[in-house]
Image 1 (tube, rainbow, N blue to C red):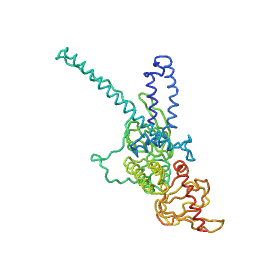
Image 2: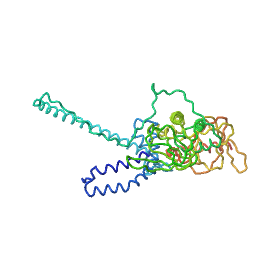
Image 3: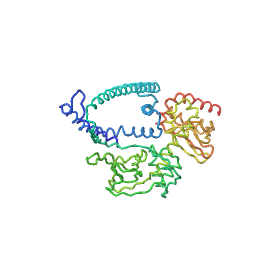
Image 4: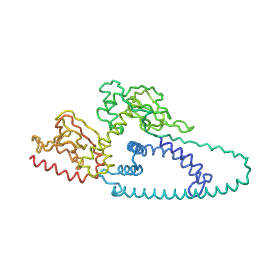
Length: 454
C-alpha cells in the first residue's frame, strides 16, 4: 500500500523538473507529458498493487529477517530464483549461477567507480574550499571588525509521506522477559477455521503445530459494525486482524486529497500485520463495509511467536539441511531458500500413512526425526513388501514430482513421534531444479531396493 505513494511523488515532481530534451514543464511538450502522467496514474497504481507489491513484500520480509551483508546481491539472487520456470531453467535459457556471478562482478565495478568519483569530488571540494578561504581572508581585512554577521534561517525542509521502517529492538531499556500468550477458548471448529486461514500466509507458514495452536488460541474475537474504523492511517500498529465473516475497505489519504479505496478484504484475509512486522506506522486506514466478525492478535504475541518462529525455523532447518547429503553442494543462500519453503508435518503414532502407492504425488519429504518404512506391492492383489527404511536426513517422494507419475510405493511411520519436512510440487520444481540431475541419478536406489526385496 505504501508503494502507491510514489505515484503522487511522480505527479508532483513533473511540474518542476526538467523534461528530457532540455524542455521545462512550462513548454508545450512538458505540459503534454504532465497530462500523460496524470491520466495514467491509476494504471500505475493498479500495476504496483497487482504485480509489484506481492514480490516486494516477500523480498523485503526475507531481507529484514536475514539482514545479509550484501543486500544488493542477496535481492538480485532471490529475484533470479523467482524467475525460474517449472523445469528449473531460467526464462532466458542461461546459466543462473554464471549470470549471478556476472551481476556480482558488475556491482563490484560500479562500487569501485563510485568510490573513485567520490574521492575526486572530495579532492575538488577541498581545493575549492582552500581558494574560498584565501579570498575570505583577503576580504575580511577590509571589513569593519564590529560588523556582526546575521545567519540566515535554513529553508523549510518539506518532509515527504514516507515513514520509517525498523525492527523491534531489545536491550536494558526494553528487556525481553518471560512471555505467556493470552488464551481465548474456542470451539474446535473455530480453531480449525482460523488455522486454515493462516496456513497460506507466508508469515504463519513457519509455525509448527504447537505454535500454531498457541497463536490460534491467542486470537480475540472482535465485532465491527458497518462504517466502523478499525485502523487509522499513521497510527502505531498494536494488533493485526483476521476476517471470519464480512468485509473491510483499505483506504489511503495523500496530503489534502480525499481517502481512496485501494483494496477490499473478505473472509480469510489477514490485514494489519505489516506494521507489526516492520515496526512502522499504519500505511492505510481500514473500515468495515458491513457487519463483520474478526479475530484480533496482539503485537506481543505476534512478535514473540510468529517472528521468532520464522528466525528459529530458518536457523534450525539450515543447520539440519547442511548435513543432508543431497544438499551438500548447494550454497548457503540456496539452502536457506529451501529451509524457508519447508513445512513441518508431525506424526504421533507408528504405522500412520504418509503417502499411498498409486496416489498422485504433490509433495517431497525429508525426514527430520524418526524412521519411516516404504512398502510396495509388485502386482495387483499382492501383499505389500517392505522395500526400504528412511532415517533422519533421508528423502522420499521425489519420483512422482520428477516424472509426473503416481506414487510408486506407500510410506508409513515406523515409530511414534516422526517429524518430516515437506515441500509442495510447485516449490519443489522452482527451488530444486539444480538438484534434478542428482535426484534422477539417486532414483536408481529404489530399483536396487526393489530387486533385493523380490
